[in-house]
Image 1: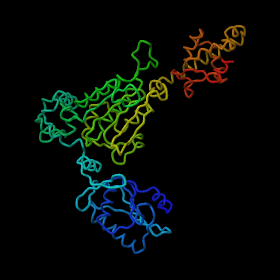
Image 2: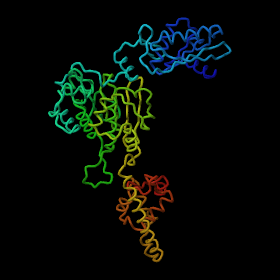
Image 3: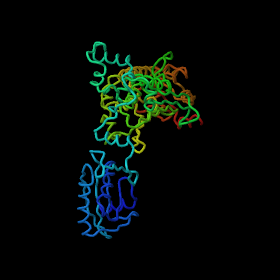
Image 4: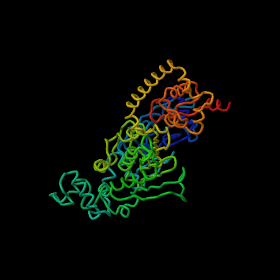
Length: 504
């Protein structure tokens, strides 16, 4: 850290990663600060600086004493011990010691009395909540939420019909042919212990979830506008039950409340979802599998007029970031649950769900809210026009290009014919004077086919194609998808220059 960096930090005041101390004399007091940083994302303690950011300064004898104090605090007053590093920075007002405490890999850390300290903004506090401590064990890989027993759920709460179907499909034999008692079988599958279902067993194959685990449901609401409105909504549904039922009902809610578009289908078709189904499947599966079971909160799905929000309890685990997951990295928070869920839900490979969703529909926004302890995916409607998620368009691109080449050849032959018969070519002219083509585009963009129908011309005629080409070159009209000139979704719209011409 340079003196300039140090001065910049001091000018911004204390925060959750920077603590100022004019001096330190108590090993235990220093240890509590170290514990809080180690249990969070790490940080630095700046010794020789006042609370207001001014420099109090240290002497060389202070530095020698503080080095011993830091070492003793980290090794004798922190459980398990940590390894901070120090650096001494000379300023005009005196020496400042910067103590760097890295984020711990063996959370939770405590002081010598067993008290767990955590950061609370710029301050620290004792961790008293059970869920908070459990999440620290979870982040260290010492405990997983899906293996925690659910005290009020026994084998009587198992949906035997659902479990039997799964067992027969997975192990290719009827459940009744198993040689093991049900209690032992569930234990071997890591779904129960001593007849009590764990969280994985309960949520995968349980019944009465709404009563036994009321917060572990999916709450879906559709709103008539772009904001949460506690007084008005279009539809609301609380979804619970075994995992497959929750997934199917949640998908049903989403598909009911998004638009269907025609795309390249005929007018008698039911239309295709505005958001590709694979995108909804991937994001919903991700929310169900990777939610934090140590947070007593439901998964929430909000459908607005301009977006869908899928909100999962728990931020991304450990050091995982949004950029990581976009590149296919993953960190399995619930290994038991995931091992079963990927056999029950649409599953196409661990770590690839987000990448697949982005490829099919790039207009996705991810929010990793570590303070609010939640992860949110926002699916925006209408962004990037019809080009979003058009996997079928990619599949048809080659045939489309061949068709375009064929049409170009036809246009060339018509051009040759026009050269040999100029009187016929002149008769086929659309009439630049009347600008029929421009007037046809004043209200809405049109495809070449619809445009030809509107002005009562043959869309494949050479005269019509020449007119389109001339107007494009003159800047009077433009493509709606300029990056894909031959796309079957291509339309033409009037430019400002074209509108000005019509006004003259």
